[in-house]
Image (cartoon, rainbow, N blue to C red):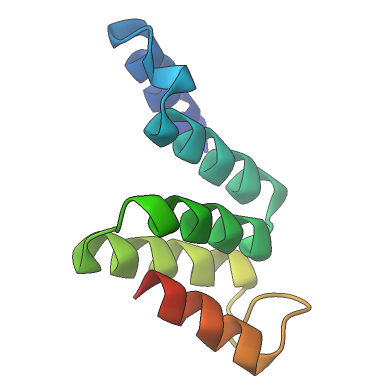
Amino acid sequence: MVAAKQAQERFEDLDYTFAESREGKLFADLVGAAEGGSAQEFVNALAEFDRISKLSPWRTRLLLDVRKSLAGPADGEVEGASEDATATAEDELG
């Protein structure tokens, strides 16, 4: 999380428009969700971004691996979400 925050600050220093860009907002939302341990917020931020700008399959797989690590090692599901909701979120991003 420290490295992600440092990267965010570095990107904002390199490009003053980054924080207000869709990508900058996505980055901030993903970092916030990861800090809070909320896999559902993480998926919601990705799905919202993906509705307008499709993520590549490689990025989708990578980000879903991060989401699974937030959900915990037990079963990889989003906390409080049904199997259908988790599959739907993955389908939206896939």
